[in-house]
Structures are given as structure tokens and as C-alpha cells.
Image (cartoon, rainbow, N blue to C red; front, side, top):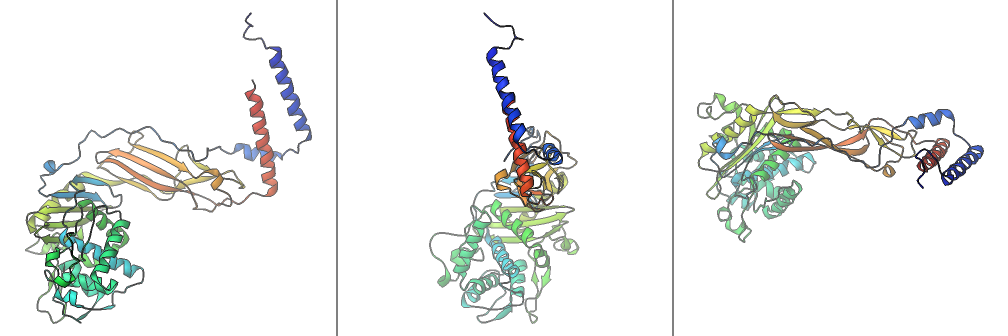
Length: 467
């Protein structure tokens, strides 16, 4: 026979009685925590260890990304990247490894600036020219063996006039030989996540154009993809913002006795707007970066321009003339500046909704307020706004057993990855979540009472589960 739904079986009544008797006995003999501590602990929010959350998935933008045809671009390979986010806006065969010509010298430039920054080299250090540099052909400042020039003068000759002999002289000064410097170039490329880059010299010359006794041999030549070139430019502008002190020099004599000046080969410099021969190529905001030409590479150019809070990086490879590398670059920059902007999605020191705290162990409190370490920005269509459909987040907190008090203000407690989906595709930015305050280690007495409180919370939960 079936019992009525409201009836309680004798077995259930017996289990309830045993549970209540047990609870009463424990309550009678246990030392209860003070009311103030219990109240404070009970009010704390509970956050699961290592909990991850993702908000509503965003939808793809209906607008199509720009193409080679829509831009009217004439180049074998090209890329448009926003510098602060690394977002790729235009991608035309950018993963294909191609000869970069003198864009190679940007790696030599980067390493020189790294050495200066680290105190291993000084701009006023004297560099003595060795045989290899003196024999190097192509674009050059006609260094003779045992000539002495400063790092600064050689760097400027390399950066604005693409002087091959200056690049080799710097390479040999830093590493002893050009080939030892090449090892440093390739190691640096790996560190910068340049997946296709491979260097055989400091200049970008083909092996056949190097001094014969200093050729590395083998069948390899220097190659880089457009995306790797863009990564290198980004590393320069982010790690060494002083780059523009050199790359914006329009003219300079290498030696005081020289009758002519070195001309900057970058015709797009904004300052060229008043130069008759170059003003039609001058582009607002351009302050770098590097041209190149060899028979194999044809005409190449890596450019960068900044307007307001957005810096664009462009690379064109395999164009057919000096002029074309600049006109094709202008098409990329026009698209970026006319259609896009960098917009802040999340400010620094902000909490993530529903993930305001991170749990900690053995602290005065059981959790700490978690905030973003820095702001988060994305490349968006001009005038676009962020909403729950286009902007989502995923939080990963450090497990509670690894966050043990004392906790310091600014200490990392997790990460949050924001995902934005718009016209330029899916963009992700990951920033640290940090503690917004110090949390001291709890006293033995406090931790003891907390343990008792947790014991009773678990007990009564277990009792509740019986019914």
C-alpha cells in the first residue's frame, strides 16, 4: 500500500531524532566562536577555487574584412596591424616567408637598442671597422678598414640610409663576427615569436652579394614573412619608443667632411610634406620604419604611423617600384585610420562582475577584492560600442590553497581574458587580476573559531541533506 505524500515513515522519524540528539550533544560541549567573528565570517562571499566563467557568447560581425581586391592592393604579401593590441586588420599572404631585403636591418637595430638599454653598449662607444664591413657592398657609407665611428653614427647610417657596411660593423662590434651576431638574431627572432624568420647576415643582402670570404655558405637565404616583420616592428615601437629619434632624421652627413648628406629612404615621413620630391608620398603620423630592395625581394617597406591613440604597423613585400611600396602602404594606412579606432573596453583596477573576490586561506578575511591590473582595449569600427553580445570574459582564479595570507596589494590572484568579436575578427586580451588591498594572516584564535564555524556549517548541511 502507498503512503500519503504528507506522511512520514517511522524510519525517517528515527533518523531525524538521532541527528537532532547528535547536534544537541555537540552544541553542549563545543566552545562556540564569538558572535562578532561568526557574523563577519558568515557575511563573506563564497567563490569556488579556480572558478572560470564565460558570459554570453558573442556573435560574428556581418561586415567583411578588407581584401586585396577591395583595397586595390598590388603586393605579393601585406599586413596591417594595430601596435598596442597586436590585432591584425588586413592579412594578405602574411604567413609566407619571403626575402625581406634591408628590412632585415631592423633586427640589427633592435639588438643594438637592447644592448644599449641593458647597459652592454653605449651610443658614444667607438666602433672600429673590420675587413668584412669594409668589403661590404650595396648601400653603404664607404667604411674603410680600421675606421672608427660611434655606435650612434653607425646606427643612424643603418636606420635612415640603409648602410650595409654600418650594419656589419655594429654586428661585429657586438658579437665578434657577423655570423656570431646572426646566431643572436635568430635567437631573438624565436623570443619574439617570429615563426618563419631566418637570418644569414645582418644586412638582408643575398649571399652572392656578401664578401666572398665571409659568406656563411649553404643554400639558405634570409627570409621573413610579413607577419614576422610586423612583430619585429611592434617589438621596436613598444620596447624602444626612442626609435623615432633616429628614424625621423631626414638628412645627415655621416662625416663632417662629406660633400653630400645621407637621405632618409622613407619617403612617407610626415616631415616630407614640405619636400618637393617627396611631398606626394608624405603621410600624416608616419615616423618609421625601414625600406628594402634586392632582386629577389623586389621593393619592400615596413611602415608605422601614429594618430591620436592608435599606432598602425604596415608591411608590403614584393612591390614593383620604389614608389609602389609607398602608395600601397598608404592604402593600408588609409583603411585603418579612416575606419577604425582603439577603444577602451575595461579600465584598470576594475572588478569583473560576479567575480569580485578571490578566495584565500588563513587570512583575516576569507577572500580579497580582485581587480584588473591594467586597462583592456580593442580595435573597433569607429563609433562602435561594447555590449554583452560582443564582449565576453573568462576568469581563472589561482586555487585557494595556493593563495595563503598574508596577501599583498597588487599580488596576482588570477587572470581574466576578454574576447571581443567585431569587423576585424575575434580579438582576445588577457590581463592579470590583482589584489586591491593587503590581507594580513589571521591569528591562531581567529583561525580556530573559523574552523569550528566551518565544522558546524558542514554539519548542519549534512543534516539538511538527510531530509
